[in-house]
Image (cartoon, one colour):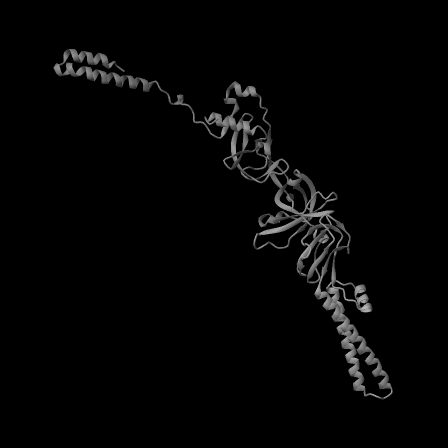
Length: 406
């Protein structure tokens, strides 16, 4: 390429006046064009820097500083292992319903005496309280009348039998007396059963019939052995049979119950092992087995009840305490990755797939809940794919630094 400066200089010296005056401007423009074309002719396309792959970390391209760290990244293939998902549900400590009794009054009346106090250990049949009941007195009086009527009707029937043998009365009269005796006997039996409903024992009823003394005091007794865990009455209170006055429970064994969401009900099976965490006991870990799974889903909460039974010899577990049940689900063969291989970022999970001993690619995956230090792969990886089993956090930091975000 010829030098435009020489050409314009010659034209300026030989040409007319408009050339000589316009030449400096043209000279400057030509010089700029020449320098631009010279610069473009010396530039090569291969000299531009290649674009960075934002998901790749290449340790070999990071210089001696990265290699000097000697991370010793362990590369392992994605393995298929028996995996059991751990189901975590909130529950509570409860009474063993087979060994608890909520005791009420048998009659309507006024509390005259309270014997048992909360925390007291009682035996079956032990007195808890007394109630003065006019209803009981009236029922006892009705029993005595029925008993006397039965005795009178029985004697009349026996006399009628003798008179019939002597041909003094007709057979119809004998049958009438027989019917009256049977009716009186049925009425006496019905009144005896009514007294039993009101809390009197067979021996007490027999004593009432023998001495004829009406006793309006009704006894409230323990129906099961255990500890008085609740008392709901005070002296002088008027109570009804529908009210609960005492709760007595055997606390040597308690239930831990939970309501499992419907979507997780398929993970439950009788006999499954579980751990129970009790926050009130400084997150004490107890072992148990699933002894009950409900047969129906609650229409209101869409949950299924589940429970286990835990020995409680020292009575540290109190009904009402909060608990967490960690239930081991059914075991299935599933691709799994170590928890140390996972990077969690922006509500997504990633692992680094090894493309060479020094080159790793950030790969999105969908994982299940962690159990035993591993997570099941739901999608994004196949069994046998090599991944960085550790140092995932550091690899991700290097990736961010390389992109200018670290």
